[in-house]
Length: 555
Image (cartoon, rainbow, N blue to C red; front, side, top):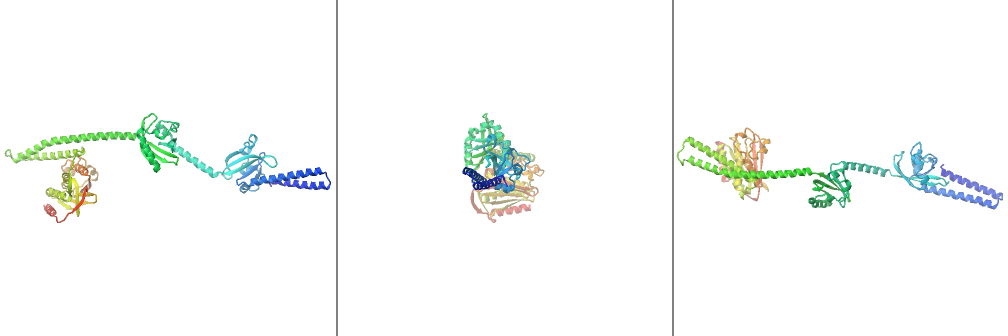
């Protein structure tokens, strides 16, 4: 039985004794005033019992744990149902620190200095982790007057364990966030919806030259250089629509020097944005230097091309004279020449023609590189140009006993091209194929087209090209460094010029090759007119080519 229940029983006992005394007094004819005094005491005791019952009823009504302890001996005077359910019904009269915390000695709060003495009547709130269930509670303590007249410690507890765990997770998250922010090499700015900085990391201060306090009193646009402010405003408008934006901008440090950053802006909430910035000043400076070097190289290359074009023109004039006069001499217009003289004159003429070919190739490449090469485009049917080139190259193929074949698609149409330049491209491709194909081999010309491009492929059964040499094919003055290739004459300008001319037409050259198995060079040209014309296998020209091929194969 707890103290409250004892008090109640004692009061009821006293009431019974008082009533018995009253009967005895009446029977013994006591004085009337004495009877009145006894009745007054009985009424007082009855009211006191009633007040005690009401107080206990109120404390029992709390859903949270409630306890009342004696501040002098630390004994529990009262607990409500939640505490009885947790600790048992026999805890009244035991020491509070022993029951609630399993301590052998009173805890710091049992000293009651927070609610007694000078703090009497004041409420004290504390948070603690209970040693019994390891849960967190918020305890509200206050000194109250107990029905017997003495002051006691009243305490009500609220379970805040889930809240405390959430706070700890939040604190740990905040600690990690702060560690990431403070140690990040990136500049990090957090701004509110108005654009004012509300947080920055040390890197932002180190790069900009501003202190944290200075930056927190600035608007984000204040850091942008004048030439980047409009771009920054437009980027932020895009950010409002998408919730994310990235850009490169120029900024001003505190000393007004410029630097460059990539800025990635991300929405943290409706009221906050975070900007992750990377200093790219060194990269931008390198890009500027590279751009200047590129411009200088282009100017130098243009100057070189113009020089080559000028020199080529100057060289062609005397070469034409040498070739012309050597041919006149060989014809005997200025008198009879002997066999030895004829041989030397022929060598002069052949060398002059070879040198003229080289100079013409240099001149063409120089024109392309300097942007002075002009195309005179016209509508060209591929059937006609292929027929023409096969007729022109038959003699060269027959002289090497190489079979020249044509495998056209069922139909192919027209392109807009410079006829002379297109002849030059095909002459180089077919001529190279014949040159690098041994006697008894073959060169096949295939044609096809799709909805965008027309393709002319020249396929040979020649020596082939190693894979590591393919990237050298189209470089001027470059010949492949192999024994087989060095057996053949050439300047290394033909394919380089062919590639330039193809690209000038909006097309391309593609090569596939394998050593010992031949090569395939494919010219791709954009189709300007999709009108097609059938290519018949009974065409007279084809018959002529087939007859020529037969002769080549028998030679």
